[in-house]
Length: 135
Ligand SMILES: [Fe+2]
Ligand SMILES: [Fe+2]
Image (cartoon, rainbow, N blue to C red; front, side, top):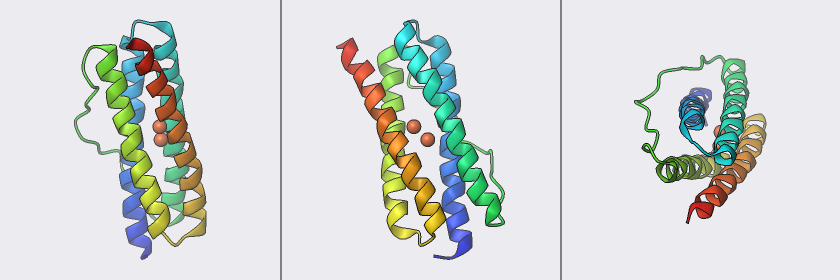
């Protein structure tokens, strides 16, 4: 895979991590109950760390991380909607990273994506547990 194609993929990942960190931060402010709010807040910080890791890979390969993002979808006003939205974001991330690890032939990138993927799986599990507790 061409270096520029890798940079493009990583930039799309970076923008998705940026959106996740903003959405989770906002949702953590709004969620009324302590436990899901704290979990969402702490995962927002993980997503920001993922941004750092991706930005490092991007700049090392001569690219520039882009902060442009789409309009944010927070999942609604109630906790159920927010948690479902967060689970969906994690699922899309898991799909993307799993696929990218198969097609990218750059050992360093694949190593970082593997680490991020493991965290996204844990995030989804944490959010699912909170959603199940509401039912
Ligand atoms: Fe992430
Ligand atoms: Fe995540």
